[in-house]
Length: 357
Image 1 (cartoon, rainbow, N blue to C red):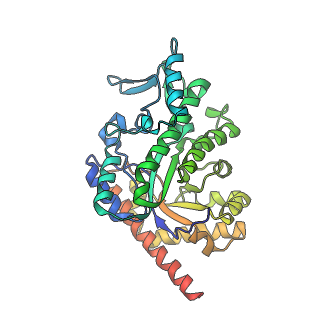
Image 2: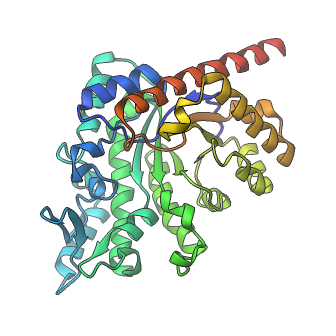
Image 3: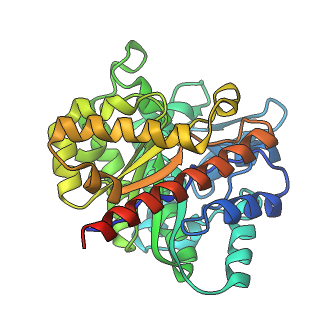
């Protein structure tokens, strides 16, 4: 892969709006070259990180009274699992669709893009990653489903199929469809809480989803909103690594050799330089965020020996995380600053390239 987004802006999935059309307009106004479909957790349980991607996974139970979801692994599960694998092996992608009951934003964005016509450079879709989904979703005994080998294989394959379904839905609107695998739980990788979660297993599970994305002609990214072992994501075969560049900009330079190989191969760093904390966002302007990004880029250039120009050409700009938990006004400020920061950086890059011709 060789692609130069040159600081084009995109975003992580969630927004706090209850009206999907209002959320879509925020997205299209701020990031028209790489829009996302908005996840709307304020709409209720169905649009939370795990339930939103639960359709098609056998034995999922919703306890609406206790506001929880779990997988019932009791009794004879063979029939349910056999039906699942039959659909999976037959590549019945539509069996793994995300319906309007579980995402108003997908269909609102699809309608808006159809009305606008034409193709955009990118459209970004997303899925909760298999590690985060598996370690958060539980069985009937509240044990993380990650530790049930039989059902965890189902989870990985179902999430991979949901990526394929999304890419098929949105590729008519874009030159490139990006699918992010959201893995926030990787910020705790290596901690005592997840001591039994091995690096090899994390790489393998993410890679299975990445391969499904590549099989549909999509670009695979992974988002982690905290610090982690960034080389894991590179080893999983992703095209885009998205990280919190507001609070953790220096951490990618600690993995200088893998980052150098990653960027030299034409792949992309997505710099989450716009904070998604209400107090932090109020103190920022596009100018301060551009300066912060340049500092992080300079640090990575020094560590890797790559030019700052190359790093910026192979950069996307994003918020540090989703905005679903923010007040609406603060979320909209995040998107305004995202647009302004991206526009400023794109002008710098254009001027630099013009001067070298």
